Image (tube, rainbow, N blue to C red; front, side):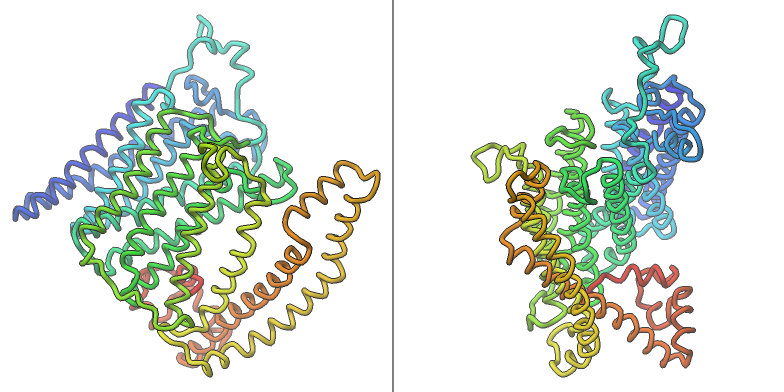
Length: 579
């Protein structure tokens, strides 16, 4: 089985290299005016991409087969297999594919190849320069992944099981019987958590590839954004689901006493999610206003870079975490190199195409959608860089701020809580604003009813805060400061007091309730208003229109939507929060 797996990796590597060469040759031949030869070469590159995906599918299938049948002839299977029984046992055995470093790297490569097939099939229809160059860039990334799996012994998933785990007769030794998947990983949320993250990680390769492709072919139109928008939104959604599943696992299995503890690996997954959020908002402005062109290109590059940063943090051994992989120097070089290349290619490409990707990003009024989108991007990008710095601070030299220190959750909370409230306020108000300058009367007309409802909800929440939450807070502080208090009570009180003075900690809670109430009702009324307008335009009842719009996109939006063939519930999900 290890030989078959190795053969699959060799074929996959050959396929992706051939694809890269053919696609590059197609571009060169087309610029030289040899259209027929260029189309043949580009078509061959697309076929080679599909062959690569087939070979990687076989590789993953071999590992899954070994896990499910208990074939321990591959050392990785021996190390990561589960002995659990029942329906969940089947899930845990299947999840062995991505439970360890080697298998997860192969699984990630396979997912990239699947996304590449989608791009290749599209490119084969008309051999468009933009699609072919996007496939070229994505295959370059895939080449790095497959090469590491094939040529790095520490990342090779198909090493045959040998001494000291197999005796001279080919039987497993007593040492081998003690190996297997960590019991901490045998939980349904943890079994599903990694693949959902990897789907998001792999999918975000495509917007990056299209951004670089747009720079290569010098096409500053919205075509590359339309091509990659669905991938960006799809990947962002899966990243969110994956982060949520990881939070459930951390709460139930690790017993952190909460769903989020600002663990380095948790932070790593959040980095790309936040930049991807800025990316989907930039895409919206690019499509609708022809603005944020340079923003969008750089956001696409940064999103991919932070995907790799998150993986770098998890796999390099730079920081310590309860669910990080063991440090690996090859992974350190691979992911470190990808981070640098992704950022540099974006910067150099934009410098060369600076004039072509110029756009009118001027903000006429601070009370406008354009300003809200701008501040959305600034907040997300700045917070991502700050979070990344704080996460790796323990590995930095001591002369730098926070260098050599492992920061507490309270430090992260002190930054995230007020920033999160400001961000949610922007999201709540943005749909009520006009793109350039908001008319005051129109704003208050739209905001009046949601604001009244929000005040009512806020009063209810404030009553709950006064009668329940604040007394509980005060009780914890009093218990921790009382004479003869237990160590647990003292620790709990110290943790609360480290979050800031009483007025600040509880003041943030009250302001947070107010913003949450406004966000809830503004969103609710925005959906209701949209459904009402559509119902009046079509002559259908509100309920009939609301139920029908989850089956098909309304005609008025189908023509302009970049994803018109998709059901309209996907269109609704694809509309960023501020749109």
